[in-house]
Image 1 (cartoon, rainbow, N blue to C red):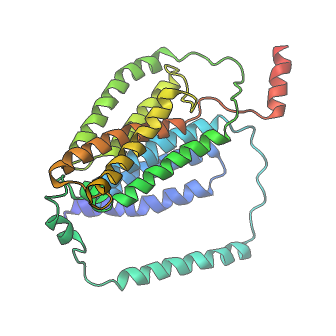
Image 2: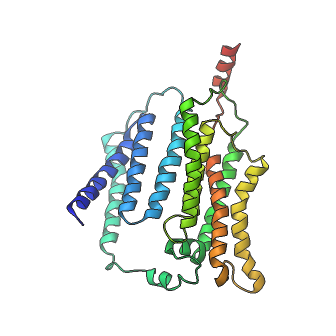
Image 3: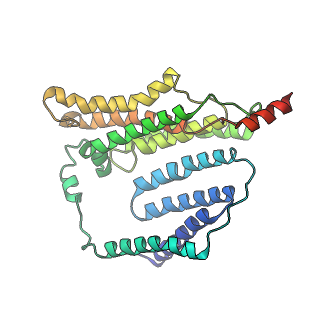
Length: 318
C-alpha cells in the first residue's frame, strides 16, 4: 500500500472507535443521531477499503440512509428532555468494563492464533460458478449455493414488517400536517426517478458485480421514504391490496422457485442449469419490490401521542 493508503486506514481506525464512543456517551439525542450517521458513513468507506463493496453498499443505504431517516423521524417523537439519572460510580464503571476488556483480549487472541490466510471456500465456489447461472460469487452463494439463508432472511423481514404493523394503532396526527416545501417537492421529483434507475441498474448488474436485490430494494425503500416525507403518497398499510402484493411477491416467488424442482425429482432450491440465470433474476426482481416495501413500512409518517398530549392538543383547539 502507498503512504496515502496507510494514512487513510489509520485515520479510519482511529476515528471509528471515537465516534462510536461519543455516540454512546452523549446524552443529547440530536447529537447522538449525527454521530451515528457519521459513524455509518465512515463504516461504509471502511468496508469499501476492506474489499467488501456489497457490505459497503448495504451499510450506506440501510445502516446510514434508512436507519438515519428513522432516527431523525424519531427525534420528532421525543418530548421535553428529562433529567438524566446520576452516573454510576467509578468503581461500578470499572467493574462493568472488566468483561469488555476480557472480551477484547479474547478476540485479539483468537485473531492472532488463526492460521495463515487461506482461500477458504473460494476455490470451491469458483469451481462451480458456471452452472450457478451467475458470474458473481456473492450472488451465486446467496441465491444458489446458500439459498436457504436468503429465503429465511426474507421471511424474517416479512415477519418484522407484519410485527411493526401489528403494534401500530390508528395514528393520531397532532394538528394538520404542513404541506411539503417547494424545495423538498422539487428534490423528490428529481431524485426518485434517478433512484429507480439506480435500483434497476444494481439489480441487473448484481449477477456479475456487486449489487443485487437487497441493495436495489434499499434504494427503492429510500425513494419511498422521500415520497412519504414529501406527502406525495399515503403511508403504506397492510389493508391495501397493492401493499400486500408488494410484500408477498418476493417471498412467494422465491418459495415457488425453491419448491418447483421437487416436482421433477430434484432437490429443493436446485435450479435447472439452463434456467438458473433467468430464475435468479426473476427471484431478485421480486425480492427487490418486497424489500423496498418492507423498508418503507418501517418509516412512520404519523405518530400515536400519549393521552396527555392528545388532551392538551384538544384543549388548544377548543
